[in-house]
Each structure stands twice: as structure tokens, then as C-alpha cells.
Length: 123
Image 1 (cartoon, helix red, strand yellow):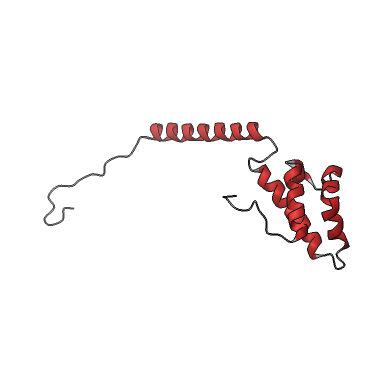
Image 2 (image 1 turned 30 degrees about the horizontal axis):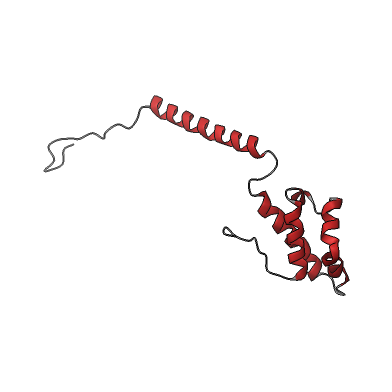
């Protein structure tokens, strides 16, 4: 059927062939898998931002002790060296093993009621 004023029938331009499309998708998948393999091999069980994770985990621990301590005795213990004892005894959890020094800094900041120093993208 020809519409009035349109004497020619145009065809759509064909896209890439199925072979080209499948090769492109396979190449993209191979590059993505190679990148994932490299990241896993590089960092293994430790995340790339492990220092931030360690500080924030310590801050949360200290902050929780501060919030749930009605007498203030536990906070005094943390500030008098309790954070270091927790980290050295392995009671800080897996995240404290990423960087024990930063975990202790975060624990002290949380127990003292200070704002976290290492928070956000720019610190």
C-alpha cells in the first residue's frame, strides 16, 4: 500500500549482524569478568576501603557503649585503655583486623562523644 504523496517505500537500515552483536557482548563479558577476578585477587577478603570500615566500626562500638551505659563506668574503662584491650583481644570483630589502630581511634571518638573524623568521601 502506498500512501498519497509517498511513492517510494523505504526500508529500515539493518543493525549489526547477530554475529557481531554476540561477539561484542562476549568481549564485554570477558572484560568484566577479568576485572572482577583482578579485584578479588588484589583484595581477597579485605575490601579496598578497609581503613574507613575499621574506623567506622570502632566508632559505632564506642558510641553504642556510650549510649547504653547508664552509670558511665564502661565509658571510663574504654577511654582509659579499654578500646586497645578490645582490639588486642580480638573482640573488636573482623572489621577491627583491617586496621586495629584506626579501629581504636574510632572507638575512642565514639566513647568520648565526638563527631567521627573519617566520615564521607573527603576526609
